[in-house]
Image (cartoon, rainbow, N blue to C red):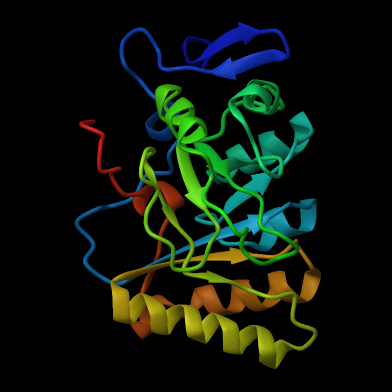
Length: 228
């Protein structure tokens, strides 16, 4: 949407449109918020053509950059996309990162080798994201919701497990967290074929087990100092 973009030194960056529309709303996948089942959200680090064909459409893709063909395929399936931030972002490096591609609902801070970073993303970066209409996901497991941006923290970062059984065990743990907390957000490692296959099979059975797989935009929380 051209109204949600502005030209910067490094390229086009998200902005809040003159009529108040924001990327975190405009590019959101539809979801019935009256659904009271425990919610599970998934974010995949990276993407591939085979993964896009097999992953549940509610899965969000976190990408450092992306070719236009991959983005188009994701949009045709109704998948939300996130910009994967560079490590230790600052307000000075943020603008260039935000121009890497367009049409994303928000950003994900970069986990450190599959685990969470040690420190909270700076408040100035969070405020800059909120001012551009973007949500922010913090990959630190169990951390408090972002204090100055619309978003949430991860509940579980799944490891790149070598066996089907270990992948299934981690997905079952995500269900346990969702049942206990009402919702749970899982960060998936890259689109390995076995992982994609197990996630697809697991997700197909979620409704029968009393859960609902939701887009990331249906899981975000209001920051303490935000009014809208």
